[in-house]
Length: 246
Image 1 (cartoon, rainbow, N blue to C red):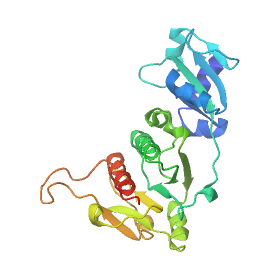
Image 2: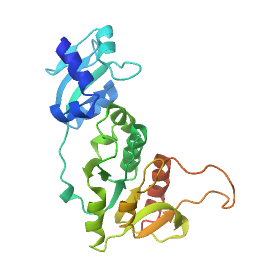
Image 3: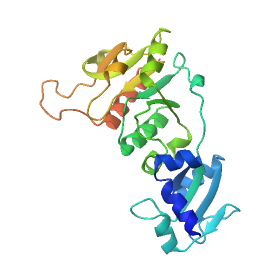
Image 4: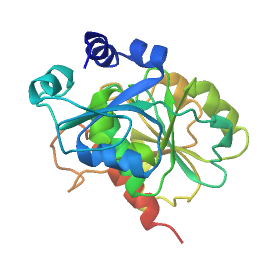
């Protein structure tokens, strides 16, 4: 393992490095094996002895894995994976349920939301340009492999939704002034918008929302937490949409 390789891995912790090299980091044998089974292009794997075999594998000592790792506790392997390219034009909210994330900035939240989408069979997430990078190492780890099956797109979200709503496609969003999600008819196509952790859905994006939803506390008049974590709220909303499926 060379000094240049260590520097490259550290550079990939930053979005600029990932964009420049077209690579991201995945750590741990279970996650890396999922990428291999899915035939994602893997440039290189650094692994402790006996973990992996193959032409792209370089065996390293435990102390070198500690130098490479971007995690608090180093794992037994680290892979450099090529970033995939997706076409937003292929996403069809008229025929499927799509998630939209408006300025969701916490990597852990984004990773969990990708995992939630995978669980509920949502294959596309459209993100504002200010949303966390889905190939951030913390996001990749938090997805627990769901990043393999969920395509994440980045665009001018307000502009994208403005074009979608003109097609008569329903756009849902979560708001404190919305209607009770458990009492509202829900479709099995369209877009569900989830907002920023602290500010919620931005004003520009909110203009295109046609159906505002609210997840009520229980009981309704109880004074408790001010709001739900965005990843938790996404799980509840997706579950209710799938429960309503006919």
